[in-house]
Length: 311
Image (cartoon, rainbow, N blue to C red):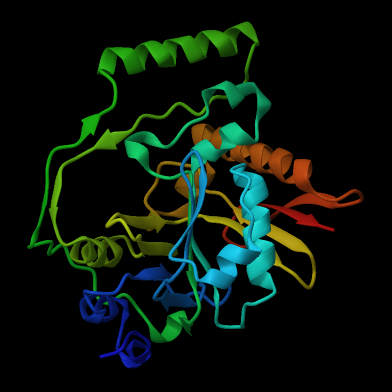
């Protein structure tokens, strides 16, 4: 079966099982139908890779790409150059799919510029794959299938934090002191967990997607054998090029999505988190809005505050 005949298959789980093992898979998967927020699922076989891991690279690019694109090894400049060149040669069914890492912010924010480097584990800061033929299928016709917890064929070891518990608690105490002193009013304190994994990443993705039923899922395999599996409930940014409106639907709170909405709405702690993330998104979007843009907030019918920009 060829990759692009997969549009005839029943659901996303079947895609993952039938995609040829000798071909890389990149897929953006909206696993929960909704008349407004669901996206079309997109599946593609990538060809060229644009990567930045301290230096810029075009991998597996044909000669006309290499002759036309000059890389400076500044990630943001090169990203603009590559996207601008392919925009002149793309089609309605082509495009880039991949990731831009959190740590790329060190190339944007001057106060952390001294801490530039690759992601932990040597993951690239940018990894975009050119997909000349993207298959798009409406979510209504491509459900993930019934939830399952069957992960036979995969073996996941215990999760290990990147720092001892006492170190993390000391960081929490330090953040609280900064807030008490008025030096900051919020902080995003995180830690990374790792685990040994053996087996099929596609089988793991199939199981994880069917259990989580994410609004915005992804399975991205790169040319070096790595796989990114995303199970995100958040719409980070959506751009309407006609109205020039950007919509963000960040999520804060610690409730499963099946509980009564009033439980979340009436929580003082979760309300504080919601106001924090809304203000953060408003500030970030306003920083990049064109002169004269209007930044505003609204609550939709599900009581989610949506920061928006229109320009």
